[in-house]
Image 1 (cartoon, rainbow, N blue to C red):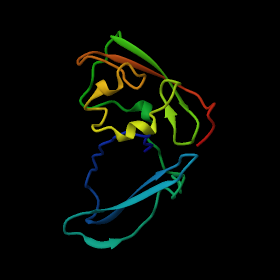
Image 2: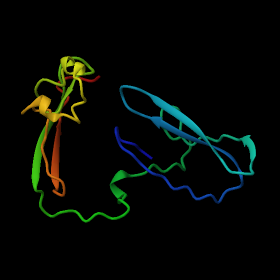
Image 3: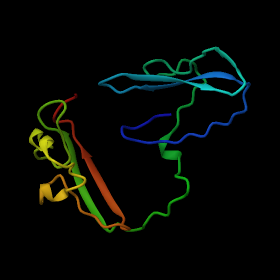
Image 4: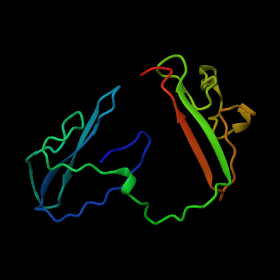
Length: 158
């Protein structure tokens, strides 16, 4: 399955295979970096012999023709969520690099500056530190908010 940056997934695995150890692999296939991790799923009472037959490579590519990757556009949340027909608020955010490879902006303006790293409290706990900065979006609980991300690559690849 493909994981987007910052995404969180819960996976239910049907335990209907022989009791033994199984290798689980996760690989990132991003253009700018390669990330790989593996874990061991162990059945209680199984043999602790690992027979590895990988379905994906370290780069996240399939190793056999019978691999099927999850299509994110076909999954639905559980429990089901009834979407609002009209958003209460809409924010259009310009996502782009601004200067160095590690500097990103959601407003097209100055990114989160290094001078803010010395704050006594995290911004999440004291939003007043930023006043009317473009780093803050105010919403109310129980409302539907549309976030439109306009992604540009004028800053170049990382």
